[in-house]
Image (cartoon, rainbow, N blue to C red; front, side, top):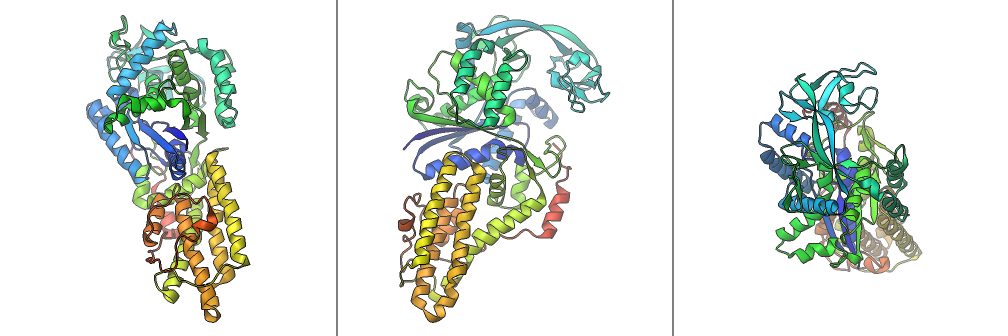
Length: 573
């Protein structure tokens, strides 16, 4: 069996994420991790909170808390919500960890030694009232192009024109509102990633199985306009990883921190070190996942993220790893996603528009959301969440197909044979054809999962569920029982084994439902069904079970209308 390293793009610390964030990285990564574990592979699935940068400082200030305290509290909140959605991380770390501090400073030192970091003097806007340099996006003013009065220093959201802070009319600090701004000179470190352009280009060309979305974004950054540009990796902030050259001070960089987009991807590696420490393991245990000179040669590394994160993961982070000159494991497959939009517009954290992860769990169990989001994953294009589509999918797929099948077969068995698997009868042509069909479908399902084709996998899984209902409709054991109880017993026994099969196959999508069905069937978690014919005989005559409660309650029109109104844009960020 193979060894699989899986990372999900790490969510930012400033608040609870919406469903668009969930389907963009964490949830499909969890689907893949669960599937690989079910097939017997060794998996290390890592995620963390991204805790540095100006937004974290401002969110903490708004909450009236020290930034370290705020980040610790929000990490606990995000970890609890992730658990609520059954995200099966092996470790959920923090980019503010001591491990990430040390590794980030280590990489900076290695890159500097390789001549890949340069010192650049540049002019930035300084807010006298705030006592700090302001990142471009924290300067507001009137757009000189369209007159929009809340344009940011990097771009006008109204007309989309790219801007510099000095372009703005009546510029002010987005932190305090002060207009007492001046341009000052400051020094920063730049990663000379342009020096690695050809090497990055060749590396990306070698990834022939990457989604077109991933490679097209990377190639655009490499070749459009002036091509790949060097990137600043430091900021004038208080909160972050202090700039050091390895373990040594960096003259002229006192009081500065590394830019969040430099240290955040390094947290993937640091998170493995955190995992090892949390589990009482040695450094060798995490290094065997990340260092190709220390055991990671056979690791397959897969990253999951939204399309907005692709440039940093295909260019800047690889440049950091390559430029270090060390034997770090590079990503093998990068699965990127488009955006999930909300009811005719966009999810918006700032406007409170859409459904946020904590709210979703208050409305319905996690499996309802997991199924809808994954079966509608924005793979080839943006997708749209509407309450009507959500209601229809939950009711038809989960309630009418999977839930209905498990309910029908267990209740019928209880009424005619009691709560144990009946004996008697042997397969006929219909059953043999069904098993052949299921064998082909399960093979297709597995192939789609191997390729991380999330929507196709869901479609095949639903078709597998539907086979059970179609079988019951065709053979009608309730009618057969009247004239041939032994044959009805065989049909019922097969139906109960189908429920077992569905529970095991559905676990990556519906982990709680799987647990409920297996518990009702009195079955411990079992291995993946490699041989369908054999698997469908595992619940033998005399095996006892309990009829489960309704697996999925249907969403009513009244509920849908109420939720649609409730989540139209009222939540405070």
